[in-house]
Length: 150
Image (tube, rainbow, N blue to C red; front, top):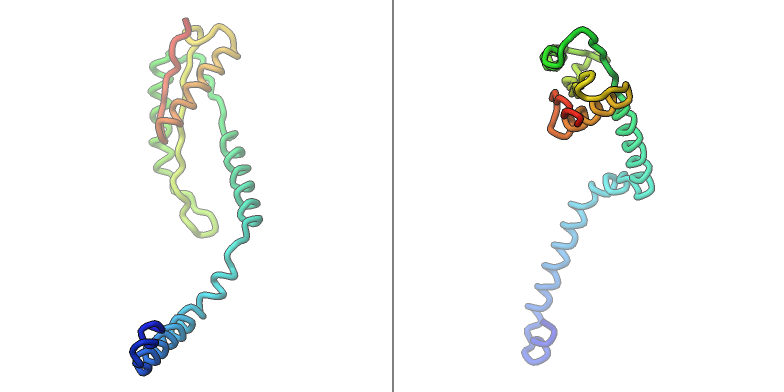
């Protein structure tokens, strides 16, 4: 606008544009003022890094929440059927903590049998563990039978 008024003396137009710009700037400042406390309360990068580390530790702890059930007198098929019933029962649980209903619990299973999946306890455990991780990768509340070892 300054170049225009250099050649065409329309100072009233230039002044009006500057006044309008000032009014919009004041309005913007008034609208942003309530946001300042929220912006100041945002966590710093170091705080976010600490929080991220804490979350990773919790994930590691939850991954360790595994256990083994040994059913020595059941066939592989019956063990798999029994394992498939457990998540159904767990879903029906309604657990409250501090007067709040907690989210539903999920359970995934890896099933292995002796001697089809291993001739030693360690081999059997490894096969069941591998099947468990396959079940977890496929989603929640899954039962996967280990592949036969050859």
